[in-house]
Length: 397
Image (cartoon, rainbow, N blue to C red):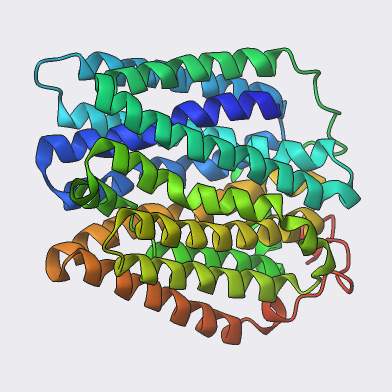
């Protein structure tokens, strides 16, 4: 499973660079790049909760394989469109939405599958491995995408992504079936609502969702990277900007052994998310590529620390038969923030400039973390040593 996700995510990261690059190349507008977030958010909002419910009812591995295969077809459409003399902008937006839909169908069963395979006392280590693999892909993928675009255009990046999806699906097909679920639910609206009722009963979960959404909404400047990269040299610099947060995230995950000694996970999440905001604010003042990459790397390291503690809270407090549905809710939280944040960044940049958009967003992120920590005392004081196991039945919460 780890190998399949490394392959798939590396290809996806190449496309992650290629799509905004192509949109900016066609439109010369950071607002148009930011609007990709709207196209991607809608299918996630619709499908993530459905996928989470299916993950608690069906074979999670097969759901992931189906999503990977469908994503390969979408990448093929992007490849064909890129070969046209005048690529269609609407096709790029439509494919971005379809890839988001595939991700929405993939992530909840995939996230729910890990705790199904890993013992509770190994969850932090599993989280560290997951972040390590993700960071390797998020460093190599954007860098690879930038080089491929500079040398041969976006078509090659899309071709690599298509191949990666097919290879990943094949690797998953060779994996042994996971253990059977102890409880199986029927997909229904009631099952989805049970997941929401459980999440609402745990303020520590609500805190992880809201703190991350706040950080990503205010301090997500990636829609501005294509325009910023022109100051630093073009497509190669664009790949570095996209890869930089993952470089910091990788370093944080490689040195994450200290996290086992931290028990107040809510505070760790809040402080790390505020660190992300400070890193982004500093990035807004960077005038050289090396300094921009350094600031983004620091921010990415803070985001990784936040992510490790968020995933630990999730894995330690959610019963197995609810993991798919809660993974769907989690996906809405961690995906909606960045997507809407890119829309915000593009819109604010058009009004007050690139630097104003980035710096103001970073500072608002820090302020939001402080406010949420104050409003959610059970999240702020959450201590894993005192936490009780989750109630197995959300209807009794």
